[in-house]
View 1 (tube, rainbow over the protein chains, first blue to last red):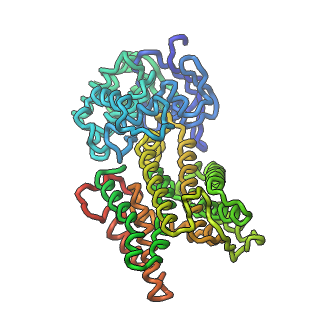
View 2: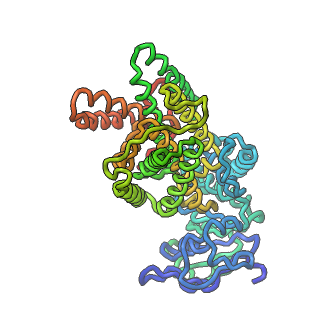
View 3: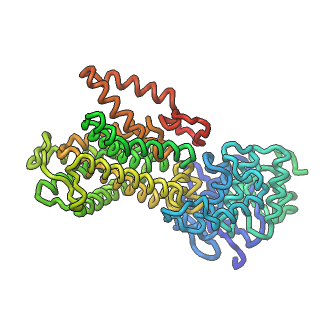
Length: 252
Length: 320
């Protein structure tokens, strides 16, 4: 408990009759890559939404660095160091890649009520934004409109925007969704390079990626956690095989 | 964003506007001085509206409210014997900022169609307040004598002086809005328009930025109203009517909401068409409609994108 960066305590969220989150208690330890897997409709995205503050839970509590964040609005949580990427790329399509990241840096700095100076000439925004683009491998695409980036590049850009806020916890909702094998491989390399620098909660369907990256894996089925443990334990878990891995064939 | 191309169009247009009184005097047609002053005043209001529409994605159907407040504030002050221009300016800024703060605090929580309807409802509310002011002429309005009195050397009763006063304020508003748009605040505003969910996820408290933009926009329109009162020396609820809010929207859309200067062109086009067509027939609005449709069809980004040189195109996502 003392080690946990993020902890949820019996979170419950119902949509009508459907229990999307059913007494979920999850702990993400500082420094780990924690994968959250489960079949479609298991409630993974709903859980991420509650952690970031986009969705309000019906009951239960959440702690970040030991602090109760259950009642905090999304933007306050972001400033505490919680950054997320979305399942469907969520970027500013009508801005360049560099402007996207510079805006993320600006919001992290918390000084957006400045009305006079040219934000595009501000090196305290541009320099860190360029460095972050470089980190995710998009340096050469800095001045390209985000809408004109390839799907894989847009996902990289999203990670860059999340990183720009120097987060303590990175919540990645299916970063590999819709990617070809080459793009996936590049994303795995990128996430591996972040390992140890930032704690990651990774929601992902790509089992190759999950088993390549995760220190711990939590399995959700129908809103409930059915297993949590080391990758080897999860691989060996009968219930998990039956509920989830079975239909896609056992992983590798 | 101000591209080099927009900068050129803006500079050339402002220079041309500065020559109008000389040309009008040479041609012996002083009517045009007042007419073009009117275009510039509505240009200011349209630039103010476009600050939240083009750059903030907030389609307000009630900005006549702020123009009307400016008109009433100056008109009633003069009517009651207060002619100090600085008092007028303070009054107009305070009043339009307060009204925009109250209206905005409700409106900016909503978006899309709801935003349109609520801004419209507030403006219509003020319109009926204006109609109800029987001591100031109610429906018929009220003519007053006198103008804002700023300084002995600045005699706004002189048409040419007034013209250059309006020109200077238009230039100042354009400069300020241009600075705002490319500042950190402007970037945040564009981010909100582009992807509200994302910018919230990044940690921006969206509400206060939209509200601040709404207030800035309202104050600019209020200032336009104060100038309009000086031009017409007449207050009337007609200034608050929803069709006036519609006119402002038409100016912004025809001029081009992707630019700071575009709405000034829109104001010029609408008022010139109105003037030309109404001299041919009293049913001029029948002709205006199809012309507006053609403009929007053939210049999707408004006049701003149709003007030469077309080399540098605006990079902007279509709103849809």
